[in-house]
Each structure stands twice: as structure tokens, then as C-alpha cells.
Image (cartoon, rainbow, N blue to C red):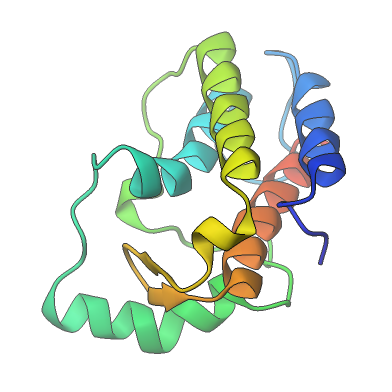
Length: 150
């Protein structure tokens, strides 16, 4: 898995995002490109913006024990997986706004660096190590950029 905390990897991902246009069509799935960019930003909203509530009770346990390994592990995502409700994008999103927002989140994450994330609490999965944070960040972005052919 590439290390999103390395500046050259972050730049590679940003370069892939910059290849997108509003006309890009998905190879699979239902989201348009603006919705996909907004969808990818949700992970960062959960870290930086406080706009999402943490799961409680049984849901938190299910996420930690059944979903965490899939999200933070090395194995790539399969196509057309179900997504958590807060990641669903059902309204139109402005492409340029969402593109800038995602790039800003990536830049902030890279600038904070991996040490900032070591053993940091995830909203959904509890404390994660650097490898788990990296896998969650990079794998999700790579999956959706591949979805749109970049």
C-alpha cells in the first residue's frame, strides 16, 4: 500500500484528482464525479470538522469488530460495496467545490504527518496505528479514483 503521508504520494493522488473533469463517468457505481469527491471527503470531515456523530452502542461494536479490518486492512475494496449512511451522496455536488475541499483535506493530512495520527482515535473504529490510518486514507481514495478512470 502506498504511504499517503509521503509528500510524493499525496501529490500523486492530487494529480489524479486534477485529471478529473465534471464529464468523467464511473466505470462502476451510481455516483457522479462531484458526489464521489464529496463521498471521499467524509473520512476527513469525521477527523477535522466535527460534523458527524460517533456511533454508539451496538453499532460501534459492529464497526470495530466487523468493518474495521476491511477498511484499515491491505486488501483492496470490491466494486459496488454498500456504504455507511453518512457516506451516501444522493444530492448533486458542485465539482469544483468538492475537488478543492478534498485536495485541501489531503494537504492538511500530509502536513500534519503520520506522527499526528499514530494511536489517534477514529470516530468509527477506535484507536488506529499509522498503518491503519494510511490504509484507510489511501485505499479509499485509490478505489474511487480508479472508479473514475484516473
